[in-house]
Image 1: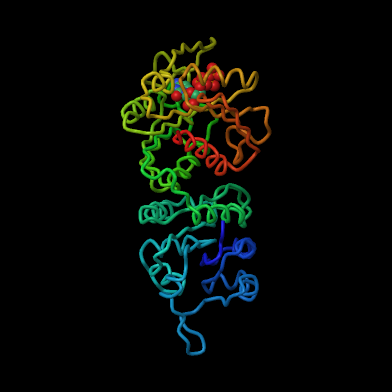
Image 2 (image 1 turned 90 degrees about the vertical axis):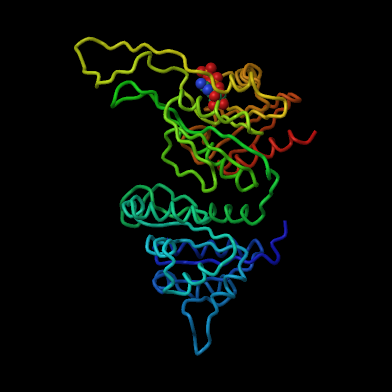
Length: 399
Ligand code: CTP
């Protein structure tokens, strides 16, 4: 893949994470991209323009004019094949949302015609604040791509969500955004993701440890590749990507209803959700009060969504399932592949370090019903795993 001629405009705003932008510039330059940097004044107090001009091999832009020469924001916007603002502060996010243009970075944003991607960085309370979340949602609706924040130690010493994504992940994101493979163009895709919560009473539920990361990564990748994606998402804390048709659900029954209403008009159906196999036989309208005796809960089976779709699907529809196993992995996955009439099954073994729920990585094996083929993959980021799964799906269209 040639990067020659690809221009990356990097915007840097005044967050402590600005020091990470130097690594990002290095990664881009090393890979052969042309990089220009625009900083806000606050950012230039966090990291020197000299560092960035040396690494990017280009002058760094801060002001509207220098030595009587106008820095043309329109030209910068037109030069860029992609504009990535990393880190982006709550302040710049708010200004972007409202079209405030009081510095060179913001005027360039307003004149840019290329895709714009932002990687927010801030303290956890600022990130969670309803004003910030509202601005983020609104920017998503305006077509800005958001790279999710990481969870971890923050510059304030607090621990939580708000860290900027690591430069390597931002680099990966921009690379795939620039070299978009539109092999799912025109395909209608339905993805289930996340856990389900089965209500016991107004305050309690039975759930599972799924975070929804894998299914959301699949939705994100499918959109990037031109697919039209409907995401049926259980109670997950992760933000779904912009551009999906989102159906939020809570219980296995809600998820089943959403899938049954939609799957007939879809070409590809991916069942990445961890659906409860059992749900309480009865739900109490009032809080269940404790007694001295033990409590026995009666559970009933839920509808197997994947098996139902497997039974009813047409030959021109592709169905992909997941199997999370702890023992006899291949045997169990193969049984599920057959029983639920999947075209592909993605096996994660909990024996593999870094695989399964909550991790940012996954290690998968894909079993195919078409030719009994088994494909093994290395431990990778869930984003890359999503790419591998969709590559296998695309191969199924090639007769
Ligand atoms: N699935 C579903 N509806 C359910 C249960 C599971 O659609 N009610 C889907 C999952 O999304 C996944 C696959 O079926 O794609 C997993 O199969 P399943 O047999 O449910 O796996 P486990 O719950 O792990 O089953 P077991 O307890 O037999 O291991």
